[in-house]
Length: 290
Image 1 (cartoon, rainbow, N blue to C red):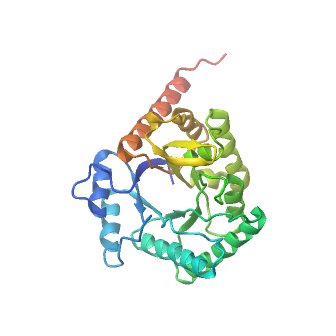
Image 2: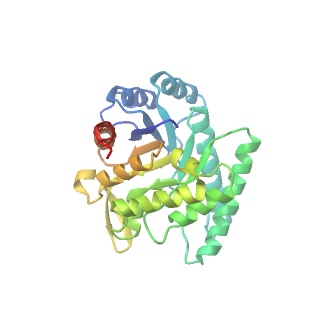
Image 3: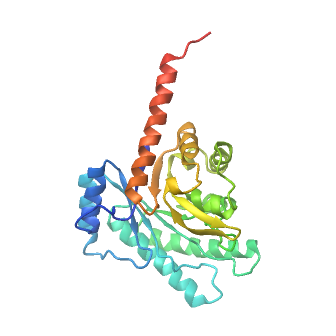
């Protein structure tokens, strides 16, 4: 990626008609540059429709990512559910690849009361199988376990970064709101946002910061973590400081709005980010050397 692109989690609410291809075109009309295909309940694009989606994305110059179905648990106590979870991730990657998308994210699973190391090994085993299947089929796409919003869910930053170090074609999907909720209100200052980005750079190098897939939204939370998403202005997420950290660390990739008003908050983030960039350029241009 050459820059940080902002987009919506799914078809913009103001899009009419509400097809994926029309949604992509509407994203561009809004002035945004990315859209996430939302397969959260089912993989709703067929192989026959995928070329149409790819054409719309190419003509509109919109980058596509994907969120695989919610019904995934790579640490299930039932082998059939692990197999079904692997299939859902692989099939999401297949369709996203046919649509011209470059990254598929998902919630990897739950600890199920088990030791964190044992859970990690189970998730890693399934991820290696997923990558092996995709490589055999010639599908070159980033597979991204996502940081999650509850302590009962597998997926803190350290776990996701370790998987990214150990398995080819695996990179993190960093959901800053989830991390904020998971820690019951922490990770909401510039210093704390910067610490996450520093960890990514330390573990994955500049490639980790220049190939980001992020989710940003307001969020309601309690002692047990995430409750539900909110608009940025309704929430306490300090998105201005987050965007400042992303600018200062020269982060590139895709930032997806998952707010209830997806395009309004995507545009708000894009405007804020560009304003921060212009301010920095102005200060650099007008600084006086002593």
